[in-house]
Amino acid sequence: PPKHPSSVGRDSALRSLRQSLRQSGTSSGGVEPVLAHLRKAKDAEQAGDLLSAAAALQAALALQPNHKDIQAQYERVSHAVSRNLADNYEKQARYEEKQGKWGAAALSWERVSEGRPEDAEAARGAAEALLKATGDMRKAERFAQRAVDIAPSDVANVVVLGRVLLAAGLRVRAKRELEKAVKLDPQNEMIKHLLREAR
Image (cartoon, rainbow, N blue to C red; front, side, top):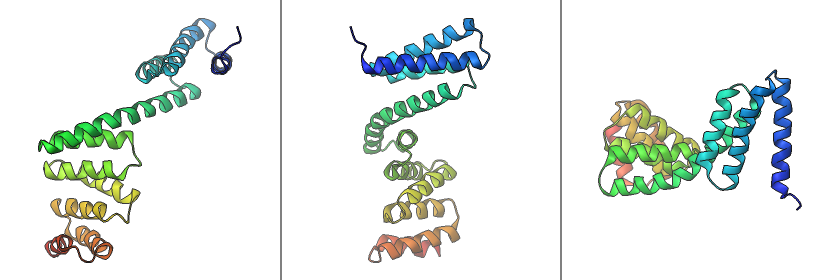
């Protein structure tokens, strides 16, 4: 029977990896276990089991830690795992917020932000939860800054950064951020109140 196109691609990828492993001076005895892990990773990924794929690639990397192709595959798959898990962590974070469990919510939002580094709402969620939990303000500042970097014209991000800086006692920087927030939303009384606090 004709081979499935993706399995043809997989076979040629394995062949080229076998070649590059041999060229990098790995003995053929050392090549086969690595290839077995890579085959397992490909099969798991095709079956939609990203956790097993990541584990198999990690095992291949343990045998060939400096192999660029394997490193790239591992990074790609583990990033996909983080993205998938981010959705579950977001549900968890929202539930924990409703329960007023701010420390747990902060941890869940951090995980969402790791899985979706371009998501300003996740970064802001982590910063807000850390603020309410009176957690690590340096970490809260990093997340609030990330939210502002992603979406600088979203007033909610700028306000959270201002609030975190105020809570950390960094009044001059807080004032600067809150002045930006007032420009974005001139009618907002809460921002004006925070700005008075910063002065």
